[in-house]
Amino acid sequence: MKAFRLILGFCLSAPASLGFANITGSDLQNFNATTNGLDFVTVQSSETLGKGIFNLGLFSNYAVNTLPRYEAEDGRDTDINDSIVAADVNFGMGLTSFWDIGISIPSVIYQDVNFDGDRGQFDKNGVTEIRANSKWRLWGDREGGIAFIFGTNVNVTENNPYVGAGGKPTLNFEFAFDTTFNKIAVGANVGYRKRSPGERVEGFPIEPLEDQYIGSLAASYLFTSLDTKLIFEFYAGMPTKKTETVKNRTASAAEMLLGIKHDLTDALAFHAGAGTEAGNGTASADWRVYTGINYVFGGENEKPAPLIAAAPKPKKPGPPTPMIPKFVETPEPGPAEPAGEGDEVFVLRGINFVFDSASRVLPGTREILTNLGQHLKKNTVEKVIIEGHTDSVGQEKYNHDLGLQRAKVIREYILRSEKIEPHVIEARSYGETRPVADNGNYQGRQLNRRVVFRIIYKK
Image (cartoon, rainbow, N blue to C red; front, top):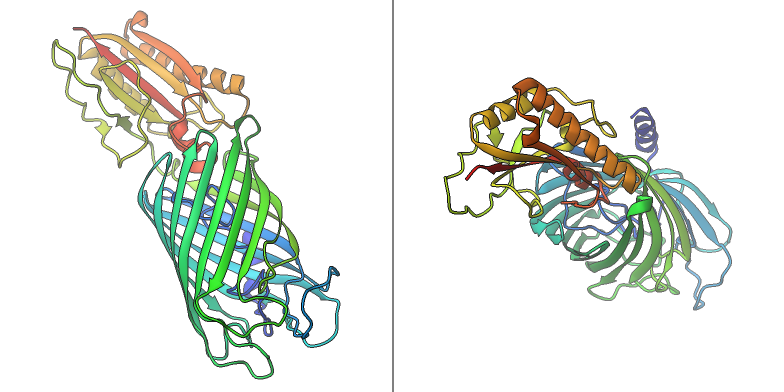
């Protein structure tokens, strides 16, 4: 956290005073890592951060040939005429199970211009704009969904010819779509960028940009054994009407990138990759490399988790099953539990276990298990199956053993505290093999770390 405060303080203390169409700094930015850090790099999925979950992100990228040149000749040479190092500090927060918000602060850290003649460049380093967004998931499950995103870009770069003198904030309206096929996730964003340009900045031979259509595509593959996603993205913007721009670049812009996201720990993810322009457009880099981290926290450690009642199976002929006990809370809609045995099914989320631990439980867990044990003693129970489930971080065998240890710890606790016959309760482990959410992000792994109770009553 100290590092983030230092970076943020540096950024806010040095606004850029003369900058134009820099891909890593203005509201034309093509490389713009998501503030929630979910799923892809710059392309939004339909998923939002869960309630009480926070994401802190820090990204940097080195881009070549992004600054505007005003020469009349067509085409571009292959020399490195300018290069820029930029950083983005991102903050994301989940407000509900379907709504998150975020803010991003991009800055120019370093620039090097290697040509003479008419051109645009930054007068000094610092913050170039402030970006804010809010995303609502309209529909979805673990396989995909649809979300609406509203965002705004507030330019703080002086004399930005693409915004114009007196230009107002830019408004962005987007829809995000995504779906999953086994370990492959695909996503698409489509939207409209509403600009309120000012007057042409004196001395620059270009008009401020007008409204744009924006769109992007993404695909990723999760290598579970490596805790790594391979990500491909394509993103583009096209003006709704013709705008006078730099002679040798179109007003449209398009880029693509290939990168990886590696989960170093349960909460810390590392990004790295490279990209190139897909068209000779305004602010498009000949090529770029990027790296970044996302640190996620909150949610599971806010308070002890209750037992969660899963959807009950259809009743079979015989004595009616007991009512759901009072200590079980009905949660907001969550992922469905895979089919299996049990007249009643309860889920104890991984919130009760410290990450990577089979014995260290958080406060409140013992009380919940005691209540469950008393519930079992009051009813004619034939069998209780305790299933241990984990996320995919780590080796498969290790996760199987960890899930079994967790199930055994809970079994032994109930046996000792409630004096239930040992043959009634069985401990099993499915490790990482039965996920109910995406193992490629923090909150999905939270949902996958769980203990499932399947209660079978005597008929």
